[in-house]
Length: 292
Image (cartoon, rainbow, N blue to C red; front, side, top):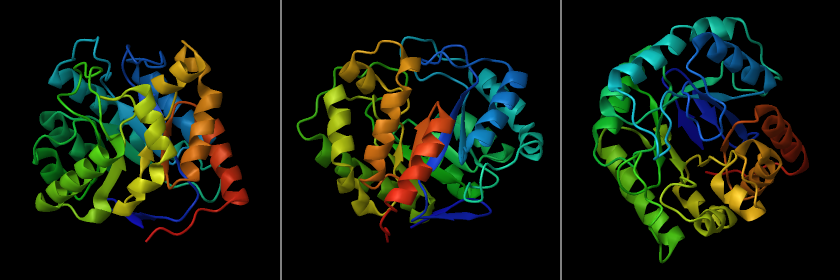
């Protein structure tokens, strides 16, 4: 199973891949973001040194109780980081020989006007939480030969969808991904440019998230890398009654282990060092089976 990027291809089976979260905003739910590019540069270098295979940069919080920033502001935040990306890589070293090098630059955005601009800034992957209401972002990625992450959700981003209930979350998710993969192919992407994300916490109840994680193997039918955004998620907090997100890292690693045994490929987390070490240990204990 391959993931084709603009100038290289990643392949599985391999050790699970760690995606480090870098929030260039003031209102991340986890409280670990800053609108400060000097800080962001150092944090990116730190995560790379801890073993990050992907750096996922977000300029706007997905929280529904925060106003959206302007398109101009979002682009400027990305530009301030991306122009420094070559220097960040030059000043970093891989933690081990299996780390993706250089790490994949993933930009977390969904507004088409922003996607159009940032694809020329070096983005290899667009992490799109919109659920692809139309073909535009897929078409833009196809034009730039970039990969696209498709996240399961309903409705417009940055709106509260906590009221949504699912009769059969897994079947609904499979129907959704089948439709969106077809949409991406129609827009000019190849299957090898698509990553799937079950969208934990988006238009789902904690029980839905747990059900999907427990039955993740059902999503391997698409033969695409599955990204699990398990870092400090709300379903962990509710399950363990841990209110502070920064205190959920140990349980996050339990979710990483669960994903590893069920077909996960990429793990989006705040605490990169622990995730890297967990995945390296899991690979030594129980290598993943080949996914064709």
